[in-house]
Image 1 (cartoon, rainbow, N blue to C red):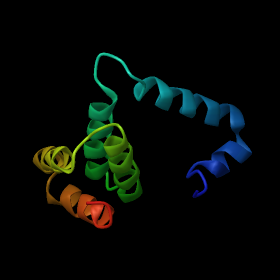
Image 2 (cartoon, rainbow, N blue to C red):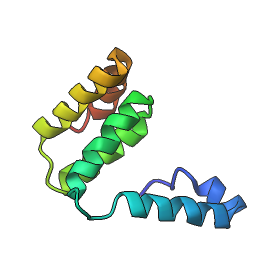
Image 3 (cartoon, helix red, strand yellow):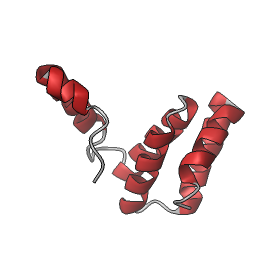
Length: 99
């Protein structure tokens, strides 16, 4: 498995890293919104922010949680609507080997 993208933060400021991890666990835990939809929302946000690796990882997590390829593409449509074509290029690069 690849090294955690925030490993340097963990190594240099583990208390801060724990706060970040807890925030992620809070946001992406099962709740009123099913987890696959939370991953799809996060995927659209990462696409809008240009976070290619985030889109890739979140797409895989969404599929593991039961999302279809069609649902992933609909999340990309939402990213395009809100963030524009740049989000689609980010998603295309991230999803090339997944879909």
